[in-house]
Image (tube, rainbow, N blue to C red; front, top):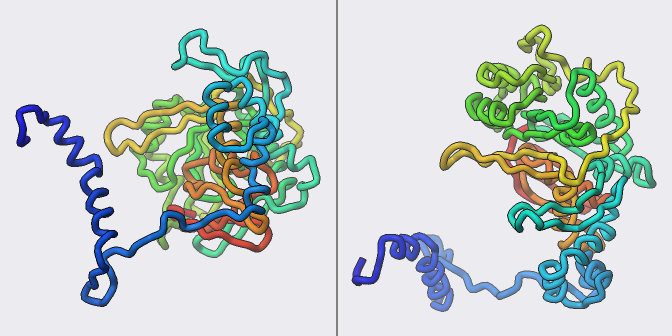
Length: 398
């Protein structure tokens, strides 16, 4: 601290806020290029824009359609309405997304308890699984691919919207048969695969609360999240591959359950078909056996718009993991609107590159839109429409 007015806080902020490094970067880009040992420059001048949309791109953009629905032409006006007139903005978003409420809401936002305790779409009822999966299976997209997956070992699975919906219905009914219902927390400790989405939407189908758990976590990290959420069930796999190594997921889950006493049921997906999977009588069931005799006609549970849907925990890198609770209506509308706000190009569409193994809402955001899907592969994700892939990097784990 070189001046009497400088404080430790202000110096720390200046040193670690990135201000100095950004200033150096800007200054360096203005200088002539300097070669390294191999002739490569330290830094290259870059243009302000790496891509500019054509008039056709702008005209076909989802954001343009929403703006016109609200009677404006510019993004700044759309942004202003979202802040100043939420009662006007969000109904337009819901309508544009095609989200269906079984019971209409009475009030868009209620801040009577204070802005920090605002509730949205008060009085409305809906089901996220219906909006994200089932309604597409009931329409013209039924036989189109909804999810395509390739594992690290080359295993491949493709599901149409109809098949995906059937799997969600059957797993939801299977979970209901072991006592999982509205408000129950269900841990999802699975490798990156369509089974993540099936499990996620099966929970939403029942009105249960999913607790996604990163497939690379060790037993203590899994136990901490299950215990804090007071999870009643855990959905996992017999094993998976991660960077070429076999991961005994069921064994890891069993170790975690020693410190998560509230978990009374475990559902195991035979990802690898291992012969020596440890199973606890009365608690553990294989996924395929659980759904074997289901009828697949359990009606999706219509829940309040503020009903809990997802309990997501922070990584715990800087302390005890902190849980963030997402509810059915806001999770669906926010995920869908964020995805729809991106430019829609005639030959391709984009989706979030977030890791599917720990972020089921990523799938929700994609599927709430319809006609959009992701091809998921261990370590990579291609977001595609027809045969036009867009390469996006994700964490590995299959």
